[in-house]
Image (tube, rainbow, N blue to C red):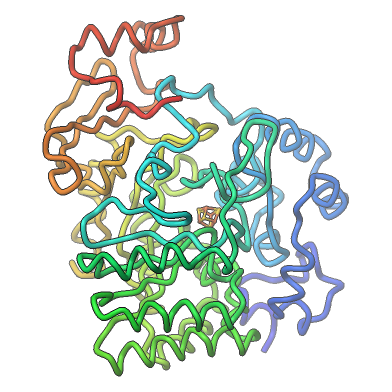
Length: 436
Ligand code: SF4
């Protein structure tokens, strides 16, 4: 097979054309040759992109909460001739000129995961579900990451929390064992692509051994950004298959959750990885994030939905971009998200149509974008109730400032403006707003 057959684009025009096909299609080679420092990016792009692009990224990185990590496969998916507007570049490599000042209600942990952590590495918000954070590293680093308080390297803006290694999982497992209401465990981080096969097996079997745990979800973006992981890392792939097979025998589900945002990411190599997963009976769901300049138009979202369906990935969610520091330029206002949902619904079968979700700041959890019970158009505020989390509390989401009329925008940005607006509206308890 040629590179065109694997990648869906002609790699002879790519950045790593002098490397062999065998290397390029190997997960280890991809990891080892990932760009993690600006000097490496500069070296790789020397003959391809103007120096001004790297300089913009260097300055952008000083303002955001996420470090960079991008492997050759993803570097080659970027159209460097149109780097400023390229939807893949935009997700991973921030350019100073595209960044916008943070909304005053943004924070480094907008979902307040750290406030609902009963044991190290565990987030317990919904009665029957926990989030088990097993690592703080990923094959790539997304600039809009919800968990920028812990994932990746420290940046000038954010010092990262520690997520403990496999040695520190015992307390979290004990908490799950002693809480029979917990049926559902999301194993995430970070990304399970970075776990050793032995740790995937140990954790997977330990969870399956807990009688009340009925569902395990392994979260990995590698289906989209490192599909060769499923083709050349036999021990790792076999570990997932082993846990999934045992789960099936026990009448428990072990699924993979992944993360595609743009149709260009669904390459022939992804199809090859999915054929392997599908043949082992492993179900894969996608959780996309709605990102301005990446996928915030109906055509792109419909194409993404259909391409995922064709490789047997269920398009499960489209999330609003969380209100995390450094992400204002990615955010889309709630009414626009509702419009996009209406455009996408009906384009394909209902079971393959994603739910458009606001993960309510402050820890309200996932709410249907249409389900707000309070709306203030002038200040761009939507209030969501979440009875299973807290029946007495409203959780508020704030539209990006660029979308408001000039007067309201100036009020938000004035010193003390946030407190003045919230007080005047009389709708917010201080603890209802995620801010630091
Ligand atoms: S793969 Fe997920 S956890 Fe990792 S940086 Fe991207 S969004 Fe964050």
